[in-house]
Length: 428
Image (tube, rainbow, N blue to C red; front, side, top):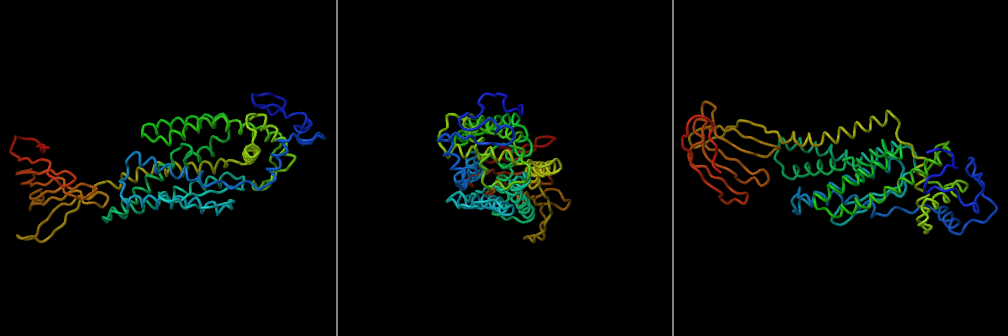
């Protein structure tokens, strides 16, 4: 779009002549002697007041996304212990955002404790340096992933069910939040670093993110997220208009000195902004809503995405954590085999034990030649109950084998008979 203010785009009409002379677009806004339009005057009055604090509902909505998705997908069991762990994981995630906001002097930083959900954090940035916002976004999921990996490593050597569940939740929820989809942390990070630099790419990114979120939510039956995707879809045009207005005014009024975004918008800048916002959104007549849109344009004018090196560094951290999370979770599932000895009625008994993520998966007695010989037992990974039991003779299944359901009831039994060369399949 041309920086020439006389150029016309749909929804971007020049300010009304009764409010300003056209000198406002020469680089210095000069109010005319004609009194302001009543709505413009009221919006200007609202802008002179401190910005309203963001409500906890905005943060609580994002906080609930993980809970809804995983509940709909049936990833976690709905036991009191699981729910308590889920709340703790979400609280730990939000605490990272909270500390980041405190570190970078955000205003109105608050953490809200929400029954049955955990916590939500809200705050308002005062800095135009985009790398600070990027760090705040990463400080939510990254500590949780690091802690999840640490607990997972512990559980590879010790069978501690509650730590194993905590590790799984930390990795799953924080890894999910790194997905490059709005309004998740990963989506907001990618938007800030890449797509916020060009309004057309930003609009395309928002459309694709809304469609993908809607399709995923529909597949999971998460209708609350479907509604969120619809709102995002309809909000794409408003975001595009705000970005275009910010582009226009950035050309007309270069930011110049670093600015504290918490300060009041200078009146000579606020008045032409109000007129352009009113022209772009003629259907909006509420002063508070118009003032909020003006503030969004003002912030968008001044916020600077991270530089090239900082962007590459932040994207590398994001990609490493996002891709490394499922890799770590799968590495924890690798089977570890060991041979242990224990006294038995007829002397020492040696058996091979197979563990996966600290859980005993199966155990088989060994003969003198280190081949399977004796009792063999397999266990269900979650409950630890017996899944299969039978015997080996010189490395070959023999005798009666019994299969159990997870509730402990017998599912089937089968006798092994010689059937010629080659491996024999266990009866099901």
